Image (cartoon, rainbow over all chains, first blue to last red; front, side):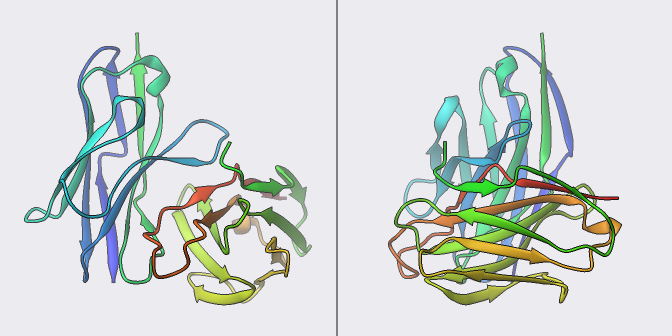
Length: 112
Length: 117
């Protein structure tokens, strides 16, 4: 069984600020972990993924995430956000079935 | 552009009716997944097909069915529609490496927004 918990359904920050979106997972097998972004009226697109190897993963648009096995976390961060980063962010985990389970999402609003 | 095409983008219908949503996966992708996104349930996995055969089932109602055709496009059929079926339905496909090399990374279409009145 696998599950994802995203802490904080809404996050609001100022442009240029550091943002941290939290994700904790549960998986009975070594997980593959993903962050997806959904802009308004669009489908989900992959930001970054962790499969094996280095625990710090860099993705598109300056985002990065760190896999922490002991804390079962995969938090997403960006050092300096832009207004265009306003979107819904989903953390997902897949295990032996390769079918990802998604968190409820975190709505990020970046204001001027 | 993910390469996954879904039609129609918007659909409004009445309770009790039946609709069909269509999905064309990325070129070469053998797996198709259907997800339902609603405000109260989040993103829920419905069903997966791999090269024409049903591979996995999630929280799919008995009133819903799907199939994948020889050309790998897929259709999701929703019948006896209820108000609660109003949602965004996503199709996704995965890389052509097959199940042994798949990590669960999916490529999503833009979704079909269903409104049941």
